[in-house]
Length: 64
Image 1 (cartoon, rainbow, N blue to C red):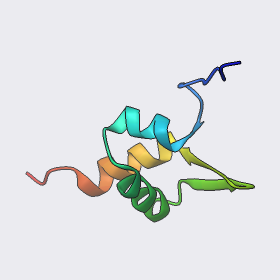
Image 2: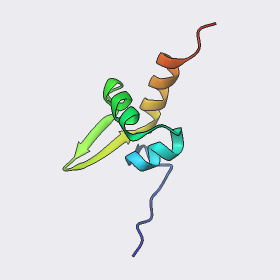
Image 3: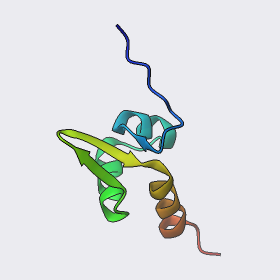
């Protein structure tokens, strides 16, 4: 039975965030930790995608 994942959810798995951002796992883990966008439910790790993307936009936008 295949798990049906919702890519529009607030909390995403790391592979879903990788697909959305084109970043590697270690970079996502580091940025999510810096942005306080990571939660742990037991052994499962979920990333608050909107919080992470806002952090990336704020911290890594090009300076004009």
